[in-house]
Image 1 (spheres, helix red, strand yellow):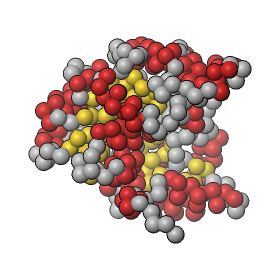
Image 2 (cartoon, helix red, strand yellow):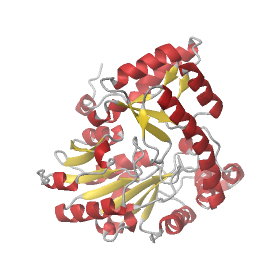
Image 3 (cartoon, one colour):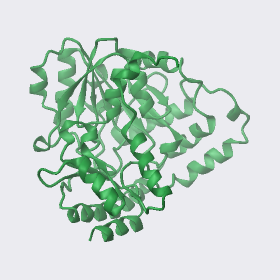
Length: 381
């Protein structure tokens, strides 16, 4: 047996990769599992997106290698989307790079800017991939606290007291996963000033902006952000295209060129048809967002009822496709979700997998039909 690379000793298999095997085994044994654990949209993309990829099969270009930078019209659609939705003006030639999902971008950015021994500021709670990728490239995670009492906003004053001499990147994620908190304009302004003072690259991971959110924000609209910030975005949640793997990274030309050096050595371009579909998605009118959110609003009300039935508390002033709920005092998250899975055949995510500050919380996904949610509520009642 060939010995694996040392870097694999620094990470574990992704939690949902392991846990869903258990859930699928229960399903295979006949258990009627309702999965409220993961944020995989179950709704369809816009019809014009499906039509665009279908029509692309007849185009001879569909079978060829594609540009590492994506179709010019895709980049134009991405910057037009940012202009229309966020009032952010970017160059389609030099300030945007299409990605095969924003998760891919986390690795590309880390490989482009981090050396072994560099440090990375990572939110606690936060998306586990920030930590695992940091470790895989030989850098060191430094966790910063997000807490309910401060509405899950970073404490910049506390960060300034740290030794930041080795910090290269700071990951932020607003709207925040798993809590659903939105960044205020004041938060983004403070973050930009903090980054400039300490020569840190801030990356805002922004895939949840348009789900149950009346005021989408981009950190790139903050004055001075272009000098020290990048933003990741994705079509996965906004357009129900998670399996299509379409994302983007946007920001300063020099930063984008550095990321391209990594990306161009790791793939041979995004499938032509997917790019054509993505272009159509990005052109959707406001009717699409209203329709999407009307479905999620109905589902969220049912999840709130479910959380209440489980003696959990929650904020109604959140966004995104999850409900973050606080467990009764002294109840451990993993024990709670395992009991719920065993006794009621309902799977939800324990908050502690997102960091130590997630202990005592659970996360419900809105990616289930109203029929499934009503059934889950009936099982609890």
